[in-house]
Each structure stands twice: as C-alpha cells, then as structure tokens.
Image: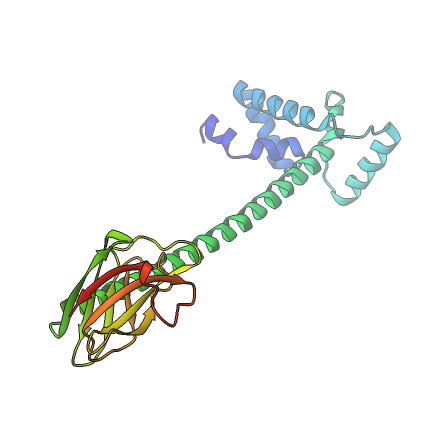
Length: 262
C-alpha cells in the first residue's frame, strides 16, 4: 500500500485514539519510522484533537489518571506502555466524546433539515395539485364555451351598447330547439362593487314585457365571460341592465347597457 493510501485508510486516527491491537500499533510505529509523511500525519492528528478538546476537557489529576489507567488495564490484557511524552493523551477520551457529541448534533440538524424539506415538498405537491385542478376546470370551461359557439342550432343575437355605455356589447347564444341561453359578456365592463348584470328576455308586442332569465354572478372570476342563464322561449329581444346585487324584479332602464332584437 502506498503512503498516501495508508494515511487515507483511517488507521492513523484509530492509532491516535488507542483503538488498535498491539500488532497494528507496531505496524503504525514501523510505518512512522520509515515514512516521515506518516509520522507528520500522526502529529497533525494529535494536534487537531488537542486543539479541539482543550477548551472543553476538564482537568484530570494524576491520581484520577492512574485510576483510569488501571481500569483500562483490567479490560485489556495487552496494553502498550504510555511514553512520558504522550501525557497529553489523557485528553483524547474527552476529544473522542466531543467528536461524538458534535457528530450527534450534526445528525440532529440534518434530521430537522430533512423534515423541513419534506414539509416544503408536501406544500409544493399540494400547490401543484391545486394548479392541476384549476387547469382542469379551465379546460372544461373552455370546452363548454367552444361547444356553445360551434353549436349550429344556436342563434347568435348581437347586443349593442346603449346611452349609459355606448362602448358596451354582448352576444346571446339562443338554442331555439332546447331554449337554452348563453351570454358572452366579454364586451361588458366589470360591474362596480355591489352591482350585478341582469339578463332580460323581452317581448315587444303587444307591449314591452321583460322577463329576467338570470344574473351574471362572479363576473370577475369567470375568465371566459360566457355565462349560462335560464331557458326562455318566444323572446323577441334581449337586454342587459346593471342592477343592485341580487337583481331586480324589473329592469332599471336608466342602466340599460346593451340591447338587441332577435
């Protein structure tokens, strides 16, 4: 094994922690004597651990150290004698504990971070589902509008702007077989707060007789501005007025926005 591979194997850290067998310790010692890089790496590991633990390790008296040493000798029949120059190894146990504590803290942080990421992913999934549902509803609405426009049985009645709103316009799609009525209100301005557009089916003879066939509720939320209203039959004209929210029993002629004959 090459020197750099030997250093990268992690055996030097175990050597410094005193976790190798006697044979392994002898092997590391031999390598350190033969290769200055190995020896320097051992010294570097020792310095790093001592620096890391110096601010946290409590003072250990000689008597305490001897007690710890005796306990270690009871557990291990073969112990490499400690050299006087390695008295700093009394700190290694504390350093190892500190490393474990830091590692546990890091894992705890990673776990919390992972949990937060899971929550974010779930929120994104919820938003995506809502977006998909919205798109599906819009797609269904588009299909319904196209079906109305393309239905050859629908008679199209254009409604022109009146005095209160000359620029306003609308279209009525009236199926005279089924009496179904749809209103294309894309040419109307958005109604003011507390107001709503009301659709009237009109008979002109023998006298003007208006019949309400519905309100254009949720005007702002309807992107297509195509509304289905109540069925009607025998209509001679259609009109749209602006009324108070909830509608009126009769049209407010001063607020007649559009009108058109069949």
